[in-house]
Length: 204
Image 1 (cartoon, rainbow, N blue to C red):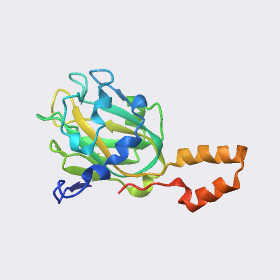
Image 2: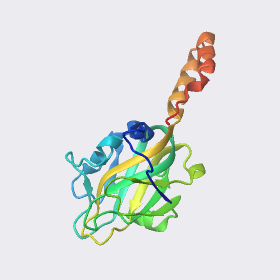
Image 3: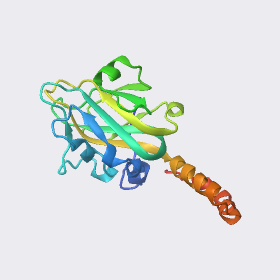
C-alpha cells in the first residue's frame, strides 16, 4: 500500500519522521549487482536531500535491473513505512520485497525465500510516496534486506534514496547496559534507569 503526502513539508517536520537513517550502520551497508562498488551508501541521507544525487546513486549493472540491498541498524528499530526514490526513463524499481534479520542473502536465496512483505512500486521520482509495512511484522528489526527484482523497462535500475519511517528502540544499547550493571551493581544507577523508562526513544 502506497500513501501520498497530503501536506506541505515546509509546514511539517518530515525530516524527523524519516530520521531512522541516523540508526543505519552505514559502514556495513552493501548491495549486490551495483555497477559502482560502494555506491549504495549514497542513497541513505536526510529526507530533505532525497532528490539530491550529486553525491552519487545506486545503479545496477547494464542489462540486469535486479538489485539486492542489505541494511543493518545500530540498534533494533520498528519500521512503519519505506520510501524509494527511483530514476527516470524506466529505471525506477517496479517491485520491492523485504527480508528481516537475515544476513548473507544472495539473489538465489531472495528468489526462493518467502518475503516478509512485497510491494508493487510506482515511479516515485519526486519522493512523495511511502509504502506502509505490516507493522506487527517489522518489530525488533536488526537488519533488513530489500530485493528489487525488476524495473519499468530501463536497461538498468537506479535508486536515489531509500528512507525508513519508524522508531529506534535502543534495545542493543540496553543489553550492553544490563551486562555492565550486573558486573558492577550500583543501586543508584538501577534507580536512575528505572526512573528514566529504560532508555527507550521514540521518533515521531
